[in-house]
Every structure is written in structure tokens, then in C-alpha cells.
Image (tube, rainbow, N blue to C red):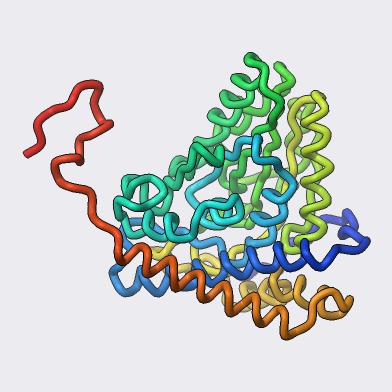
Length: 341
């Protein structure tokens, strides 16, 4: 088992300035909902209610909430297989997300996608993509389509540090730069590609430097700080929206749970995880809000109770859902319907 010191966070300063109470309440409420939703999902997986794969983003909530807060409803979002937080922050109903994890027909993808393929075309949320780096070419395609129409929007593409080792990362940045496409590349660098540490799969561990090879402006930000991340994403999104072409933002964060529910987590020490937990994005934001007199402890506790109640309602919605009829299992799979059975 590798024992590593927590990698250094960006030297860029955290965002300063005030945050109003309404925004603080919204962001903290969303972060708490993602945390409680995924904690419950882990329980349900252990109970056999959720099957297949389940990848939790506990510890990474600040990136999901801050990044999506900087986007408009017209913007496209392409996500990864660790996308529950992105989906909830985008406004997908928690019940529909939970029902999708259950595989029920009232799920966001009608129960056909499961945890890794949450999709909502009305909210321009284009997955949930199970293939590492598979979403990057899709993001380039969406941005190209918007450019050709034309439609004034940008495409935000989330991916992990493991995607940087894939050819799609380099091809996508290259094409987006050549064609000056409105793509905001958002790397959620949690320092582990499954069980492989960043310094074992990347000769250059500063991912923000990689955009330079394709003349894509790039910066890194402390992804455990929701206000710093929001400020960085807002600035990057404005630059992309101006027509300047793509931008690469590396959000340095950390997942507190294993890669997936099947992961024995033998590749990092408990001490390293505990070291990062001292920078829990929810605890940091809560301390800032309480210390600044923006939200009182009682108001924060009320937000947590609400997050737990919404999660319970989502579970009830999933439990009450129906399974897709066997006769419909081949529907939308083939160009013409084939008999089932």
C-alpha cells in the first residue's frame, strides 16, 4: 500500500469577497444533499437495493455545485460515471436519480442506464458516460453543433485525472483549439485513476500545464474550496463564452470513498484519507459561513435536515417505481422491433 503526503494544492489564492446568504444557503444545501444522497446510496447498495456499479463523489461536492452554478440553463453538460453530484446540482429531481440507481422505469433514464448513465435532455445533461474520457469527444461534437447552428451556449465537460492518459483527451483539446470551439474542459483531479496514483500514470502531474501543448489556456484551482472554484469556473466560462475558444480548468479535489463499491482500496493509506478529510469542502464552507455571520448554525442544521428528508423522499419514490415490462426490453435498441422472448 502506498503512503503519500497529500499533493500540493494550487498556489492560486482562494476567492475572497462576500457571498450573500441566499447563495450560501443554495450552495451549502446542494452540497449537503449530494453528501446525504450518496451516503444513502451506499447503504442501499450494501442492502442489495442498488446493483451493478456505484461510484461515489463524497468529498468532491464543491466542484459539482460551484461549476454548475457558473453555467446557464442553455449550456450543455457532459459528465462521467461519477455523476450523481453533477446531476443533482444541475437540478435533476432526486427521486428520478435514485430511481435510476434502482433501475426502475421512473428513473431519469427509464432505468436503462443505472448509476453511470444518468441523462436528461431537457436540462441539457448529456450523461453519465461509463467510458473513461468518452465524454470529451461528445463535448466537442455538441460545441461544434452549437457553433454551426449557431446557438449561443458553451459545453462544460467533466472528466477525471485518469482521462488525461487517454487519446481522446489530446484529440479533443486539439480539435477544440483548432476550431475555437466553446468547450470548458473541467478536470476533477482526485489524484487516483481507479487505484493508480497520479504520479504513477503521469510524468507531469500538473494537469493544468497540459493545455499549453494545444494552446488552450489553463489554470488550476483548489477544488475543496467552493468559493474559489466558483470564481475560477465563472471566469473560465466567461472567457469561453466570449468566443476565445476552449479553456482547461483543473479542480484539485479528493474522493473520501473508494473508487467504487467493489474497490478494496489497497492503494492508499488511511492516514492519507484522514489528512484530506480535514479539508472536507462542506466543513470548510460551513466554518466560513458561520465565522462570517452569513448563516447561523441553526440555519445550517435545518439545511442538513432538509437534505436528509429529500433523500428519504427520493428513496420512497424509487421504491414505489415499477420495473420496465419484459416486453419493452428491446425497445429503442434496434431500428426495427424484434420479438422478445
